[in-house]
Image (cartoon, rainbow, N blue to C red; front, side):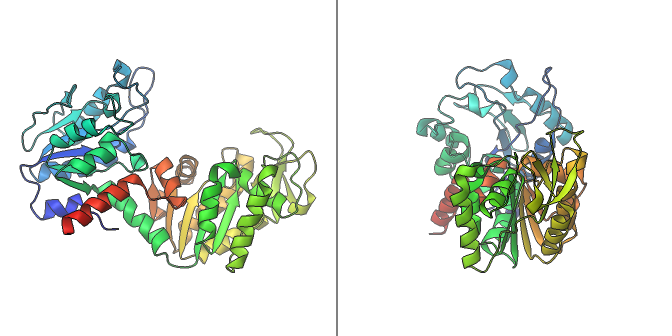
Length: 400
């Protein structure tokens, strides 16, 4: 993917004494007292910030936090806890600056955090006047927030249009590289796992992947709908009967290419949806009218694991069962361990997927873990993310 990379600018000595505006993703969870409860995103942003400081830049960093109302700043919207945590991680004082749109004073080798960018009027609608003001603050704009790459806002898109230089930070560049490796030039076979409660929420993803992947593994409520489409009974399990035609179309599209959507041959059922429900393994043809399917069965899990071990590339979005309940976690655990053990390049994304990866301790065995939920899903849908589009366009203009 042709974009200007901030790491290259630093290596070429083009950053010293320049004003660098970094759009990071510092949207971290907080408790009722405003204390940060999980700081992964802040820690992930440090390499880009440190890279800019080491290069001698005057560094400005901003992010959104929560869902503030534009023009109505409240104390709960403040990035003050984030600035404090950055101070600790960087080992230096990191001031927080409010009302920054009309001007920022920061010296080379210094850093300031600019208050919650989504409090600025016009941010979400990508107001050109606001974007131009932001762009005027810097010599180099660095987009390093993949979690916002699917949004065309003033601090993510508009500023990239008008800044003298617009480039990708190391986090965003890593996402671009992983996506290109998994979807644009994958090593075959390419296997995708798409799971979730509803086909309707991921229908366009399924349709897009059906045109490209060699195997499309479905799980959760989505698998139930595909089982119905294959003529199997699913009892009272979660499904969307009104989308059977779309599920059949995905199956047909895969078959036309000599590919497949593996349908479970056995399942784990219960009579109620609860952690202490009695789990029963059944053949997929033996599901009773009062059964709930809460996981794939061990035979199906073993078959899928073998297919994943033969894969060249794996894209994973979603657990295949109710892995939060011990009695119904085996399918997701077996699939997760197979992905970890496979020699394939794997890319995983989505909140539940990250929770499963953490639960089974396989972080170091996944090729790339994407932290951008909505952006990751839009990539799987085959969409070009606004951040990728504008950075590619700016890189092209710089070369012409």
